[in-house]
Length: 277
Length: 249
Ligand SMILES: Nc1ncnc2c1ncn2[C@@H]1O[C@H](COP(=O)(O)OP(=O)(O)OP(=O)(O)O)[C@@H](O)[C@H]1O
Ligand SMILES: [Mg+2]
Image (cartoon, rainbow over the protein chains, first blue to last red):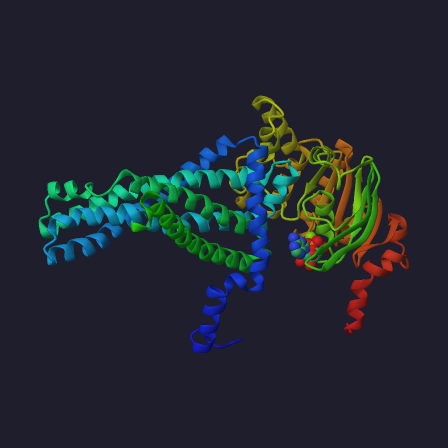
């Protein structure tokens, strides 16, 4: 087991087992039962109550505090990205007046929610896993149970509820910042006028496009947070275990983000306009 | 009295406790000796419902808690406090807030009274000067004392200690022993200690039991235990010399 991580056989082996076959490998069996248990516990705790208002408020403030810089930075990058695609090619093919529409459509329909969710999984999700995992290792969770404090009610519910509210808010932020930074750059490089840009921007973007994205953000926020917390509860006996749980948390959540975004996106489009598109 | 009968705990097929039976009598201090990794922590946690159990029964003051409803089990388990091996202090809170946590969370007393009680118990464990400090800035011994104060603030009838002296130097460990004795005598708490520390047995033990291969293999009073040739002496205390001898030292 002393081969370098870059020897090709070893690398391929790792790639296949950890990323693609990961969910099927035996290690994931235990994780799967932890996930199922925690999802069940979440709804049970929510039903039994009392709802932890204070902790939820605290977690909400914390999630916003921890996440906003990442979201703003991500949105600016997103704006540049869209500007490049829509603005550059729009100009090249003389479709100047459509640039605003394309930008808005891409951002509202897909880029904002996708980019924000991925960043959220990385910035907030992994923090949840590490935090709860280390609390577990240092027996803080056992201490809670000993004091008759339900860890699900005290730790899980606040983080999940805070996340499912925060992610749509981040997504809404991302809409604005991405569009704005996109236009600013176009104005700077190609003298795009605000009037043409924004007039066109909202011409072909119905309100349902926004609400669809926000609903997806809501579902993703819920799933990502609950998965991340669940992996924190997965038994870890040391730093190495915790590292493994954290890796699983981010891999699982990135897949979840892509999958939920894709499936709900297709579902909403189909519902609102039929398969004609 | 706590009555443990045929307690069985297994993790993914590996049996850690195998039909373990043990009685904890009121007013006494029972020390359970056992090697590292034998299942001492698992025993305490299983009794308190922190781990899933495969079989057996646990009666606390005559009430079976393993199969009882959640609220009944909670009430009876509430009579038992526990000092966890790692303390389990919340690192997001100061020592004061840690000790006050159970009272505040369950709204058991008004804030003014909580202050008084926290200070009283902090005094009892000699930690009055460190109330504003955060757990990560405490030494191992202080952390254990803070956790002890938190464990006794709800006036438990029984108190479990999970290796209270592990990782402490001899004099700090002696202070912890004195503290355990003080807590027991001043508050009249029935005490169960699991440890591999033989010194602790000599200072605190009234009854001594040996945990080995998943169950209690011997139980004797302190005087008998300390007589060379007794069962526990032979099986545990003399092991150190035996190991030395076997390796030619
Ligand atoms: N939640 C768990 N899941 C799986 N295995 C566990 C779990 N808790 C404990 N074990 C295993 O049970 C065995 C006994 O562990 P335990 O912590 O009770 O030992 P111990 O006697 O307290 O040892 P130490 O002196 O090191 O504290 C160990 O092999 C441990 O790996
Ligand atoms: Mg232990």
